[in-house]
Image (cartoon, rainbow, N blue to C red; front, side):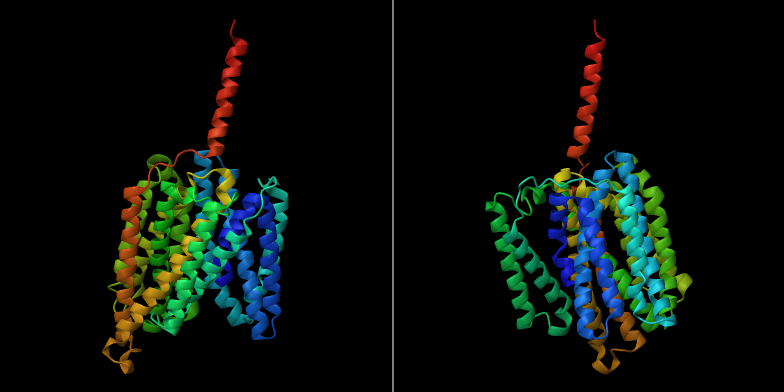
Length: 437
C-alpha cells in the first residue's frame, strides 16, 4: 500500500511524458517479476521487499490504464461502453480474486496466490504488444519534475503509513500526528514547487477544473463507503454468522455479478441518455440504502433476508455509479494530462478507502468495547460495532451522492474530441469549397 499509494501520481505523469503503452508494459513486467519473487520468498524480509515492488508496478498499471481507455476511445458512446467494461472487469476481478485466493491457499499454499500471476502477466504483456497502439508521450525535451515527484511521493507514503497504522499506534499518538504533520508539510512544499517550476509534475490548473475536483471528492467518500461495505460486512459474516472464508467469497458473488452486469450494459446507456450527474447520484443513493440495510442486520441473521438485499442494492449502486464517476474525473482533461488525471482519481480512491476503513474500524471497535473489554468479542457486541460502521458508511455514500448530484456538470469535450470534431468540420468545409462553382 505504501508504494502503490505513493507512486500513483508519478506513474500517471510518466505515462503522459513517455507513452502510456510503454509505461503500462513496464508496470506489468515489474508486477509479474515481483509476483515471482513473492511466490519464491523464503523469508519475511524478501516477501516484504517483493510486495513493495509489486505495489510500485501496480501503481504504474493503475495510473495509466484509465488514460489508455480515454485516448483509445474518443467517441462519447464508445468511451462510456469502454468504461463500463472497465468497471465490469474491476468487479469481476475482485470477486474472482476473493474466491481463487481462498481456494489456492487451502488446496496448495499461500505461495500460489502470487505464482498464479505469472501466466496472467505474460498473457497480458503479449496481448498489449499485439493490440495496443505504440503511442508516444509528449515529453519533447520536457524534463521530469524531480523535486515535485520526490515531495508528493514521500507525502503520500507517509500519509498512507500514518493512516494504516493509526488504530494500532493511536490516532492522537505522537507518531501518528507527527507523520501526518510531516506529510502535510511535504504536500505544501509540493504545491509551492508546482506553482513555480517550468514543467510541473501536476499543473495546478488541473485540480481547479470543476468536474475533476468534484469527482475526486466524491471518489474519496465513495471509496470510504465501499471499503466499509466490503471489509466490515466480511467481518460480520465471519465473526458473527460464522461463515468460512470460502462462504464469504460466495456471499459476495451475487453483488459482484450484479455490479458487473450493470457496469457492462445499463450504466453506459444511462450515461448516454442522462449524462453523468443523475446516474452517479442515483447509484450512490442506492448504495447508501444498501449500507443502511446492513446496519440493521441481526446477530442471528439469515443470508436471503439480512445479507442478500443489501448486497444487491450495493451491487446495483456501484455498477451504475462507477462508470459516470470515472468519466467525470477524466471528462475535462486534455489527452496530454490524462495519465496524471488517472493517477489523481486512483489516489483519491486509495486514500479515501484507507482513511475510511481506518476510521470506521476504529468506530466499530470502540462501540464493541463500550460494554467492557471482556464483552467486546461477543456476537452482540461485534454486531453493535458493525452497525455503527455501516451507518457512517451510509452517510459517506449519501454525502457523495449529494455532492456529485449538486456540483457535477456535463463534461466538456476533451481536446481529442474537439480536435476530431475540428478535423471533421475542416474536411466538410474543404469539400464544400471544392464543390462550389
